[in-house]
Image (cartoon, rainbow, N blue to C red; front, top):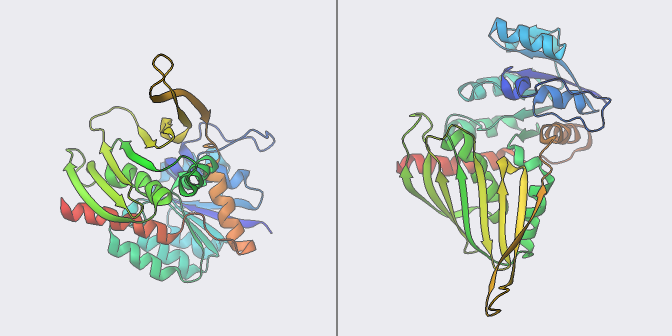
Length: 322
């Protein structure tokens, strides 16, 4: 069964991040966008999209050969009746767009993070969803290398985590939320949330230094890197057996074993890096495939509305503290 798909909001994550349209005949082709993912996913076809900007619609239609473009997403939902919808519109519109999509009878939704502008709206979105499967696009949830790291942490392959540091640029909501979701994935729900410092920057989405403590005894520190003219995500975990580092926005993962110090032989040190490229390509396609499987095979979302709600609760606590 091929599912008809629609995109609401035609900005960078919708189709702009791909420099070129991926070649479906190329087995190595990958995409960082919803439009490219719908093209590469064998169970979906992009049939329509909506954006209030005429110029954005024109550019999107030309790039992605999408002829059914709309300025009004409600008209699109009514006239095209897509099976599944990607909500890529600005965060402050998510709740109204989500409600319209649910009311139109869609079979599934991919919702960009953050869920909404605040916790109350996020909880309303969750209550509206009902039985409709919703995949939240925290992209690292669809990186199988991250999944392996999470499993290794939870089964003790690396030994106990002794220290965890997450660094990020830009704001807490836009960028820091990825780290919060990853930390929950690795360690479970935090039992203590502490604001350490509010950084200067975007008033609506400032960077924050904060800590999360978890039931297994792990303390994780989240440090904002202010004023950087680049995007930076970095995770470093010191464990009983060595050091795990995830860098380049999740593209590289390295584990440095604890090895005997070669000169004295009296203690261990961190050994040479064993670096490998993670499965970061095609996270978008895996997210779309996950939703298609939810609709056609009763699979479960790999990143759920509940996951998104928990992230919003941490953000809400930090904002109240500031």
